[in-house]
Length: 115
Image 1: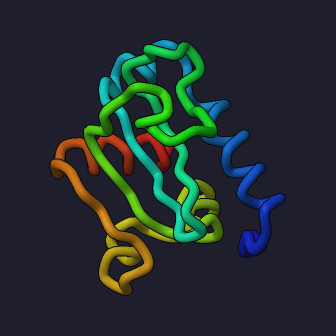
Image 2: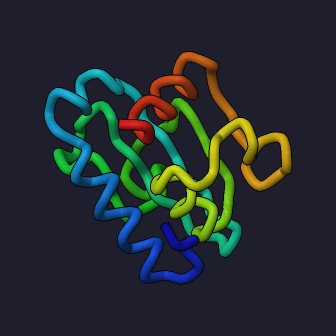
């Protein structure tokens, strides 16, 4: 598999993530995840289903949501994370990702990405 390196790969990662977000999956997630990108933008995975689509292209505060778990990384690393090319522990150990939230929510996100 090739390594994602551009916005097209980010877009493909978003599509892949959205394809995994069934009503059952959203119910199991049950939390709001914020992805903060190093270019200053953010995106939200709404596992509470408040907005119906699961993955939204806006920052949580723009949507009136408070994140339960936050991940800071580049868009390239986000794509690698979604495609299984970057393991969360390796991302944290190398400083490519910063996490804020409970270990339970980290495990839930990891399981979603592994499916």
